[in-house]
Length: 277
Image 1 (cartoon, one colour):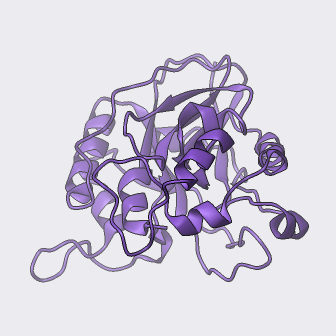
Image 2 (spheres, helix red, strand yellow):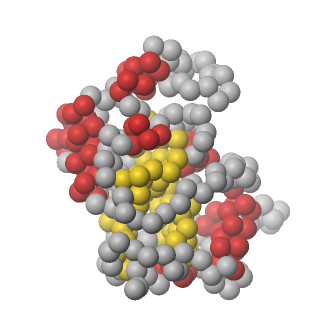
Image 3 (cartoon, rainbow, N blue to C red):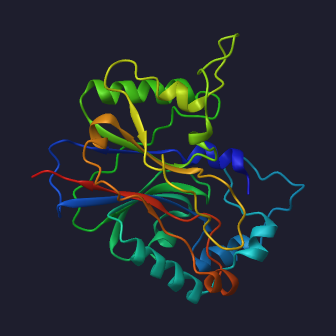
């Protein structure tokens, strides 16, 4: 998996208006990287023209690596098991990463609507929104890139806070934000601490809350040996006021499912929000 591309594309933002009505008293939001989730028919077509590890695909071409073609040819039963975990997660809004658009997402989230970016690659990002939850699909945030993500994201956070919006940033950051310590920049004024850079509390009202802070880390599967979270749900200060206490969610996979089914190398992280009437 090309992690640098995943970092570039996986950072998603969700805006919740202070006056938006809610279907229920609580709203559950989550993030889930579903590792090359592609509808079976499309996966078979892409497998026939897969790209070897020593070959670079043409710019923006829809393609998959040959090792992915061999490893992640998911069956109907694999999708059924992923759907079971989606039902168990029971989230109203899920930030999705590495999902090839609506055709793939609908096989896992059957009671949701979708907003995806317009990018051509199969590792797309977007949102699954439970049917009945008011929402709108905004324009792609095309300014954000691997080279400029810190200043662009910092500016966006400041703008959202200045307009008094409640917002969250969700996705696979490919980085343990909770492990960051020290100043935001080094002696040459170069960024060195991503979290300190975006969570500097300046101007007033731009403080951020990582919902995993203070939570013990749990691997997605018994076979994994990771030590920290890289999938994050980060709440703006005003949205953090609506967080339901002790509602942190980490949905892990059953060991037998991991052995028998083709699931994903990431699993969901989420939180419940209380929506005042």
